View 1 (tube, rainbow, N blue to C red):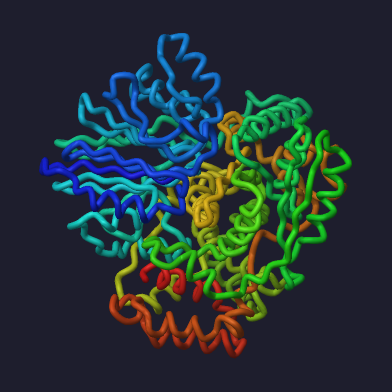
View 2: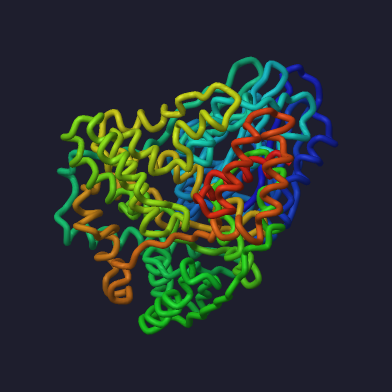
Length: 624
């Protein structure tokens, strides 16, 4: 993994070297092994390197033969060996053994179509000095981040928002429409950020930036959920095909010149990745990493150990199990992760994810994860809920609101969001809405009424992305489409990227390999879910490599007991940040009396406001 950045000064003035040094320094954790800066008057390109492949020869920015084109990339290209062979046969000369150089020659050969031949995770910046333009590309799933800003004076981009802050003269005004969306989803979906001028390059897109024109963006790949499934083979053939695709992907993801391991939890997805990796013959041991917690409601360490014992019995190579019980309630760890990032992000599972990454980083530099399987193969319980609740749409919406809205109020969520009562409350609340609004109510920590009560500014509908997905698909497919296009790249993968880059660990996700994703795109719901079973085809494809009944276990996720900590260990810092912070103070965004009441109601166990309070806390920490 690495960090990249670049600038075009449209006023023609040279980019200051001190600015570039400061930009590079903000990304030091992303790339602790080296720094490269190219400067040519008003053009500049910056790279911070975490060495993974070709440790001695892969420094960047890297140039082509006549130095007319330069490249800086954050990511890994898994088909680089084949690409290198193909491009060499076409006359291109390679100077390194790195996976990155193939991007440079692919641009020379294919022009702006170069991202279509890349298989991997990447945020790539090609600087063409002949036309004095930047071409930015982001991988299909959005595994690697890329932010940009365009003003009449300059165009700039970086792997992190905070890496743009050393650039003089940029405005950092909050976008209140985007802030509404953040409160709704706990992240900003799509190309928006909470700042008016700062945007994200969407996954599967290419951006072209020049001196005298606004950036142009076009898609080179799009995720779609098929309704018609004629091209899908019968179920037994489909399971065999999926097994081969995932196994091939895992094998390609194991290429590394530094120590590599896999995450292994108590769940299905990481167990499949670890089992497939353990089938590859190698003299090097396969290191598996897991963490556990003191709280039994969140601890999966026993099941993780059972998964490992089964994996070891089937392995074709030596495997090791590294497990550690962690105590993540130290507030300073959360502060270090979220403070000053500039981009509020309120998925609390970033904390245990970071602790797992930190534990793995003691031994390895690369780790494989199970990210993406839930979105591709129907893994979330909310998909079952959306399928079941769709049957209630025969009732008029006013009747549903009266019946189920009243029933929901009979159940308390004060004991925490994992209690049976809280789950029933969420389900009944969702039942009272139509499809898109139903999914919003499942995802959001705030009702619309609570947001109006909290905010001092006019709220935007924040429904564009949801309505886009639910306008033409049945509820389950629409929910999966929303999650892959927005929840996965803007929440799950952001969490993984931040948690791992904070300690310079590269995390790879074999389920997000293009052939696996495109196969999953066309699967019918019946292949994904059967009765209460989720990820049916994935579990059946690897049945002989999994402990019996693993796919039937309730999904726990990687959560932390926020409700309890906000009443104990985190009570004081929570009050300090929320009641004396910028949201209720300097920015004047939130009503202090509402926040104070929620804190009191939560502390006295009259209600569980933990998700709302954490969303506000994450905003405050990001604004430090």
